[in-house]
Amino acid sequence: MSRRFRIGLFALAGPGLTAVLLIGMHGLPAFGHLHAVTGLLIDRIEPHLRHATDIVTALNFDLRAYDTLGEEFILFASVTGVALLLRHLRNEDESRQDVRGIEEHRFGGASPSLRMTGLVLIPMMVALGAYVVLHGALTPGGGFQGGIVLAAGPLAILLAGRYLALRRVAPDWALESLESVGATAYTLIGVGGLIFAGVFMKNFLPLGTPGKLLSAGTMPLNSIAVGLEVTGAFLLTWTEFFDQALLVARR
Amino acid sequence: MSALQTAALIVVAIAGTAVVFTPEVLRQAIMLGIYGMTLTVLFFVFQAPDVALSEIVVSGVGMPLIILAALRKIREQDRRRKHEESEQ
Image (cartoon, rainbow over all chains, first blue to last red; front, top):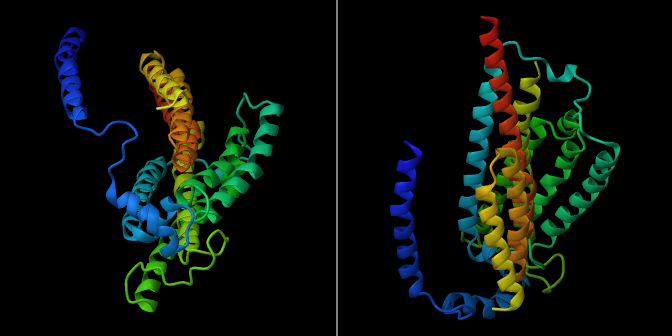
């Protein structure tokens, strides 16, 4: 496909897409005019029904918990797929070196100040991640957002240029078990609803006082379960990619 | 729409265009991180702080790092292929 042909194609498709978009956006309500009846209703009744102060978490982990179950397993399956694919490539390389033999993998450019920054970042990210996971039902955030911050914490070791130290802190078996424990725990909480309240994914624990850490029933537990899974899933994807890029390519 | 929200939208539009017009892939990965930061601000001023929290990690660290790892792998393979060709 020549450059000229591609520009011609764009000259045709670009205005067409713009026109369709403009026609489509013409019927939208104006900015700031909300017509979401269900949304406004949930906003009104949810704090009394479920005692959660963060409506988004209440939606994710209670009112639409079944939806989140599906999302959980989409993440689980896709990360498993990435791990399978990349590990298969790694094992095909017969002359692969044993990772344990190398003491430290250093980047050429990791200066002392960069390493110090990495060191300072780790506890801050882990603390922020744990905070966001635990306060899912109280303040904006929750399992997914906190889990991803938690996963970025150990990644600061990589930014500090010590990839093998990261592999020692977060070995494959630990990440895999984090991911599967998180997914299993979320499902089991749902089964708990089936056993104790007769409905799958029903919030079966006492709701507590709104605004307290232990309130909103199963929501904090769901948040922790999702947090564990997301931490494991993201770190596993990152380390699989970096195993490919840094360790396999070293020979 | 407040002035802050308008400004955030304009900055996102500029940053997004800048990502597309950045020539080299390595620089593009870094531009993508900056674009992610502008998106984070956009989400925050449109009152979605939880989305902003995950966006800041995904686009600030997650995506650029995976692109960097893939780039390194591709370059390594290119180098090896050239090396093998010169040996034959």
